[in-house]
Image (cartoon, rainbow, N blue to C red; front, side, top):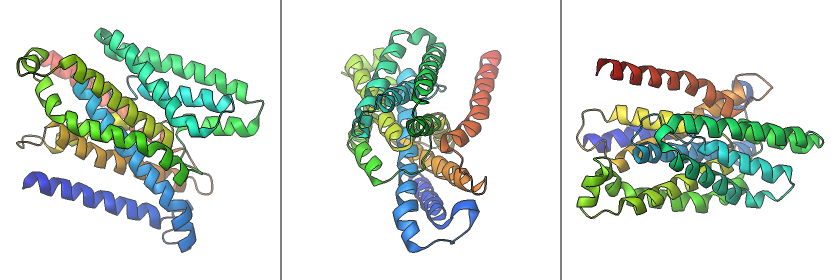
Length: 316
């Protein structure tokens, strides 16, 4: 009952945040828009913010379970950077955005393959991938500067802007997201056992290597869907699972994989909706990028996670 009440509370908070996003116009003017503006502009944008954040929240929970590392997330490990780089290359070459989900998926999968190959140095591998992807992305952006319109599009994608996004972006992402969410839910019981160690999981009949491949695929699908919908939104997949596990502390059943994933979806969605709300109201007539806001929030949070982990090691 406590678990259900906790989820109901999170869903209610998500609904309230979503309604606030719909009701708030640019420069923070509350209820200062026509019904047409709300339906045709804010509704698709707020829906994309909600779903992109939710997808990254679940992807972060899966990543942390897969690598058994609380610092693992799509942004820290360079998975988002790999997917974003692939979409950037697509935009620079002038190919249709219809192929964006497939480009993002290929980039995410490539980053994950590299991470799995160098998983003994997980965070360093992620840092190397993110740095390399960022450098190549900057190079592609400099090439795109010859076409100002294309350069703006590339820059918005790299910075995680939801400006101008609509239902078409959501429809392109949904098949990947739906597949990833279904896979995540079905993998939950196996992940609960795998957390105890590969030997125990093998003993009860779980094919650990096969499950890892399925988890990697689900993470790539969800991250690719988020990138397709909202661009690069760093640290969402780190923050949401951490807070979700904190909400379930010392409550039986709350730390199971599917329970954490469900809470992470709600928390990731709330974080991105609020970040997007700040992005389009904080600077007056000028709009900021949503990904920049999540980065500003997530940077100190990541440092706090590092500090807490270091203290635990010192005490041990």
